[in-house]
Length: 221
Image 1 (cartoon, rainbow, N blue to C red):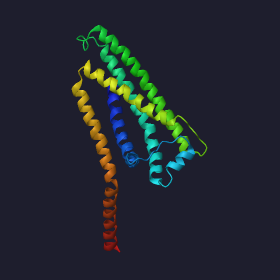
Image 2 (cartoon, one colour):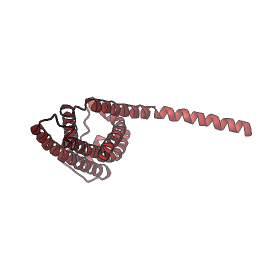
Image 3 (cartoon, rainbow, N blue to C red):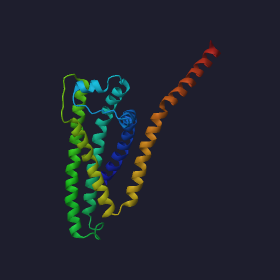
Image 4 (tube, helix red, strand yellow):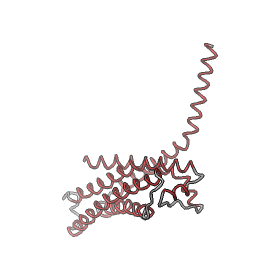
Protein backbone atom coordinates (compact mmCIF):
# COMPACT_ATOMS: atom_id res chain seq x y z
CA UNK A 1 0.00 0.00 0.00
CA UNK A 2 2.77 2.43 0.98
CA UNK A 3 4.72 1.80 -2.22
CA UNK A 4 1.60 2.39 -4.34
CA UNK A 5 0.90 5.70 -2.59
CA UNK A 6 4.57 6.65 -3.07
CA UNK A 7 4.34 5.63 -6.74
CA UNK A 8 1.33 7.87 -7.40
CA UNK A 9 2.79 10.79 -5.43
CA UNK A 10 6.06 10.56 -7.37
CA UNK A 11 4.40 10.41 -10.79
CA UNK A 12 2.28 13.49 -9.96
CA UNK A 13 5.34 15.42 -8.78
CA UNK A 14 7.34 14.21 -11.79
CA UNK A 15 4.55 15.46 -14.08
CA UNK A 16 4.69 18.93 -12.49
CA UNK A 17 8.49 19.01 -12.80
CA UNK A 18 8.24 17.83 -16.42
CA UNK A 19 5.90 20.73 -17.14
CA UNK A 20 8.41 23.20 -15.71
CA UNK A 21 11.36 21.66 -17.56
CA UNK A 22 9.44 21.48 -20.85
CA UNK A 23 8.45 25.13 -20.51
CA UNK A 24 12.07 26.14 -19.88
CA UNK A 25 13.29 24.12 -22.86
CA UNK A 26 10.66 25.27 -25.38
CA UNK A 27 12.72 28.15 -26.86
CA UNK A 28 15.67 25.78 -27.25
CA UNK A 29 13.46 23.10 -28.84
CA UNK A 30 12.14 25.60 -31.39
CA UNK A 31 15.70 26.52 -32.38
CA UNK A 32 16.59 22.83 -32.69
CA UNK A 33 13.67 22.40 -35.10
CA UNK A 34 15.13 25.26 -37.12
CA UNK A 35 18.38 23.34 -37.45
CA UNK A 36 20.58 24.69 -34.65
CA UNK A 37 22.60 22.10 -32.72
CA UNK A 38 23.00 22.35 -28.95
CA UNK A 39 25.17 19.27 -28.42
CA UNK A 40 28.16 20.21 -26.28
CA UNK A 41 31.16 18.24 -25.07
CA UNK A 42 33.39 20.86 -23.48
CA UNK A 43 33.31 24.17 -21.62
CA UNK A 44 34.62 26.01 -24.68
CA UNK A 45 32.00 24.36 -26.86
CA UNK A 46 29.25 25.37 -24.39
CA UNK A 47 30.38 29.00 -24.46
CA UNK A 48 30.46 28.95 -28.26
CA UNK A 49 27.04 27.31 -28.70
CA UNK A 50 25.29 29.66 -26.25
CA UNK A 51 27.14 32.82 -27.32
CA UNK A 52 24.61 35.62 -27.75
CA UNK A 53 21.84 33.54 -26.16
CA UNK A 54 21.85 34.61 -22.49
CA UNK A 55 18.18 33.64 -22.01
CA UNK A 56 18.87 30.08 -23.15
CA UNK A 57 22.00 29.89 -21.00
CA UNK A 58 19.98 30.98 -17.95
CA UNK A 59 17.29 28.43 -18.84
CA UNK A 60 19.93 25.68 -18.91
CA UNK A 61 21.05 26.47 -15.36
CA UNK A 62 17.46 26.59 -14.11
CA UNK A 63 16.55 23.39 -15.96
CA UNK A 64 19.48 21.59 -14.37
CA UNK A 65 18.25 22.51 -10.88
CA UNK A 66 14.80 21.10 -11.57
CA UNK A 67 16.20 18.05 -13.36
CA UNK A 68 18.28 17.22 -10.28
CA UNK A 69 14.98 16.82 -8.41
CA UNK A 70 13.14 15.18 -11.31
CA UNK A 71 15.62 12.33 -11.76
CA UNK A 72 15.15 11.17 -8.16
CA UNK A 73 11.37 11.57 -8.21
CA UNK A 74 11.00 9.78 -11.55
CA UNK A 75 13.52 7.14 -10.54
CA UNK A 76 11.58 6.40 -7.35
CA UNK A 77 8.39 6.22 -9.42
CA UNK A 78 9.93 3.64 -11.77
CA UNK A 79 11.28 1.54 -8.92
CA UNK A 80 8.02 1.61 -6.96
CA UNK A 81 6.05 0.84 -10.14
CA UNK A 82 8.18 -2.26 -10.72
CA UNK A 83 7.84 -3.30 -7.06
CA UNK A 84 4.06 -2.78 -7.22
CA UNK A 85 3.82 -5.07 -10.24
CA UNK A 86 6.02 -7.63 -8.49
CA UNK A 87 3.68 -7.60 -5.49
CA UNK A 88 0.67 -8.07 -7.79
CA UNK A 89 2.44 -10.94 -9.54
CA UNK A 90 3.03 -12.58 -6.15
CA UNK A 91 -0.65 -12.27 -5.13
CA UNK A 92 -2.27 -15.62 -5.86
CA UNK A 93 -5.78 -14.15 -5.88
CA UNK A 94 -5.00 -11.49 -8.45
CA UNK A 95 -3.02 -13.68 -10.86
CA UNK A 96 -4.93 -16.95 -10.63
CA UNK A 97 -5.93 -16.63 -14.31
CA UNK A 98 -2.32 -16.13 -15.46
CA UNK A 99 -0.30 -19.21 -16.39
CA UNK A 100 2.61 -20.13 -14.15
CA UNK A 101 5.02 -19.89 -17.11
CA UNK A 102 3.87 -16.34 -17.78
CA UNK A 103 4.26 -15.42 -14.12
CA UNK A 104 7.86 -16.63 -14.18
CA UNK A 105 8.48 -14.62 -17.34
CA UNK A 106 6.92 -11.54 -15.73
CA UNK A 107 9.15 -11.94 -12.68
CA UNK A 108 12.27 -12.15 -14.85
CA UNK A 109 11.26 -9.10 -16.91
CA UNK A 110 10.45 -7.05 -13.82
CA UNK A 111 13.85 -7.86 -12.31
CA UNK A 112 15.49 -6.55 -15.48
CA UNK A 113 13.32 -3.42 -15.42
CA UNK A 114 14.28 -2.81 -11.79
CA UNK A 115 17.98 -2.88 -12.68
CA UNK A 116 17.41 -0.58 -15.68
CA UNK A 117 15.46 1.86 -13.47
CA UNK A 118 18.41 2.13 -11.09
CA UNK A 119 20.73 2.51 -14.09
CA UNK A 120 18.58 5.42 -15.31
CA UNK A 121 18.95 7.30 -12.02
CA UNK A 122 22.73 6.81 -12.10
CA UNK A 123 23.05 7.86 -15.76
CA UNK A 124 20.86 10.97 -15.37
CA UNK A 125 22.68 12.01 -12.19
CA UNK A 126 26.05 11.50 -13.86
CA UNK A 127 24.99 13.46 -16.96
CA UNK A 128 23.84 16.37 -14.79
CA UNK A 129 27.12 16.40 -12.88
CA UNK A 130 29.15 16.47 -16.11
CA UNK A 131 26.92 19.14 -17.65
CA UNK A 132 27.18 21.24 -14.49
CA UNK A 133 30.98 21.03 -14.70
CA UNK A 134 30.90 22.11 -18.33
CA UNK A 135 28.63 25.08 -17.60
CA UNK A 136 30.41 26.32 -14.49
CA UNK A 137 34.08 25.81 -15.45
CA UNK A 138 36.26 26.76 -18.40
CA UNK A 139 38.58 23.76 -18.76
CA UNK A 140 36.29 20.71 -18.84
CA UNK A 141 35.98 18.37 -21.82
CA UNK A 142 33.70 15.29 -21.95
CA UNK A 143 33.68 13.33 -25.19
CA UNK A 144 30.74 11.03 -24.39
CA UNK A 145 28.18 13.51 -23.09
CA UNK A 146 25.84 13.45 -26.14
CA UNK A 147 25.87 9.63 -26.05
CA UNK A 148 25.15 9.65 -22.29
CA UNK A 149 22.23 12.03 -22.84
CA UNK A 150 20.68 9.68 -25.43
CA UNK A 151 21.31 6.59 -23.31
CA UNK A 152 19.63 8.29 -20.34
CA UNK A 153 16.42 8.72 -22.33
CA UNK A 154 16.50 5.07 -23.40
CA UNK A 155 17.00 3.94 -19.80
CA UNK A 156 14.19 6.26 -18.66
CA UNK A 157 11.60 5.11 -21.19
CA UNK A 158 12.38 1.38 -21.37
CA UNK A 159 11.22 0.53 -17.79
CA UNK A 160 8.13 2.71 -18.16
CA UNK A 161 7.13 1.05 -21.44
CA UNK A 162 7.83 -2.40 -20.00
CA UNK A 163 5.76 -1.77 -16.87
CA UNK A 164 2.85 -0.33 -18.85
CA UNK A 165 2.89 -3.32 -21.21
CA UNK A 166 2.85 -5.85 -18.36
CA UNK A 167 0.24 -3.86 -16.43
CA UNK A 168 -2.02 -3.72 -19.49
CA UNK A 169 -1.48 -7.16 -21.00
CA UNK A 170 -1.37 -9.37 -17.92
CA UNK A 171 -2.98 -7.42 -15.07
CA UNK A 172 -5.66 -5.66 -17.17
CA UNK A 173 -5.29 -2.31 -15.40
CA UNK A 174 -6.45 -0.38 -18.48
CA UNK A 175 -8.61 2.12 -16.59
CA UNK A 176 -5.93 2.85 -13.98
CA UNK A 177 -3.37 3.44 -16.72
CA UNK A 178 -5.70 5.66 -18.75
CA UNK A 179 -6.77 8.01 -15.97
CA UNK A 180 -3.19 8.34 -14.68
CA UNK A 181 -2.01 9.23 -18.18
CA UNK A 182 -4.79 11.84 -18.44
CA UNK A 183 -3.89 13.29 -15.02
CA UNK A 184 -0.18 13.47 -15.91
CA UNK A 185 -0.89 15.23 -19.22
CA UNK A 186 -3.31 17.58 -17.45
CA UNK A 187 -0.76 18.51 -14.78
CA UNK A 188 1.97 19.14 -17.35
CA UNK A 189 -0.34 21.29 -19.48
CA UNK A 190 -1.62 23.23 -16.45
CA UNK A 191 1.89 23.97 -15.21
CA UNK A 192 2.98 25.19 -18.65
CA UNK A 193 -0.12 27.39 -19.02
CA UNK A 194 0.39 28.95 -15.58
CA UNK A 195 4.05 29.64 -16.34
CA UNK A 196 3.09 31.17 -19.70
CA UNK A 197 0.55 33.45 -18.03
CA UNK A 198 2.82 34.32 -15.08
CA UNK A 199 4.15 37.59 -16.61
CA UNK A 200 0.59 38.72 -17.37
CA UNK A 201 -0.58 37.77 -13.87
CA UNK A 202 2.36 39.62 -12.30
CA UNK A 203 1.57 42.68 -14.42
CA UNK A 204 -2.08 42.66 -13.32
CA UNK A 205 -1.12 42.39 -9.64
CA UNK A 206 1.45 45.17 -10.09
CA UNK A 207 -1.25 47.46 -11.56
CA UNK A 208 -3.65 46.57 -8.74
CA UNK A 209 -0.93 47.34 -6.20
CA UNK A 210 -0.14 50.67 -7.91
CA UNK A 211 -3.84 51.64 -7.89
CA UNK A 212 -4.09 50.71 -4.22
CA UNK A 213 -1.09 52.85 -3.25
CA UNK A 214 -2.37 55.72 -5.39
CA UNK A 215 -5.75 55.52 -3.62
CA UNK A 216 -4.07 55.50 -0.21
CA UNK A 217 -1.85 58.43 -1.09
CA UNK A 218 -4.85 60.38 -2.43
CA UNK A 219 -6.97 59.75 0.65
CA UNK A 220 -4.31 60.36 3.28
CA UNK A 221 -1.83 62.52 1.41
